[in-house]
Image (cartoon, rainbow, N blue to C red; front, top):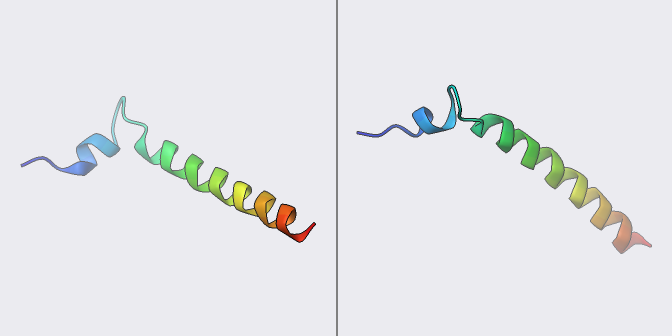
Length: 39
């Protein structure tokens, strides 16, 4: 059986780093979009 955690965490796998980066960038994009709509 393959566990997703083996591919998400560990040496050479930056899954958590990429996920947190995408979440942060997504929040920034939403804020910019809200400013655009408000203008």
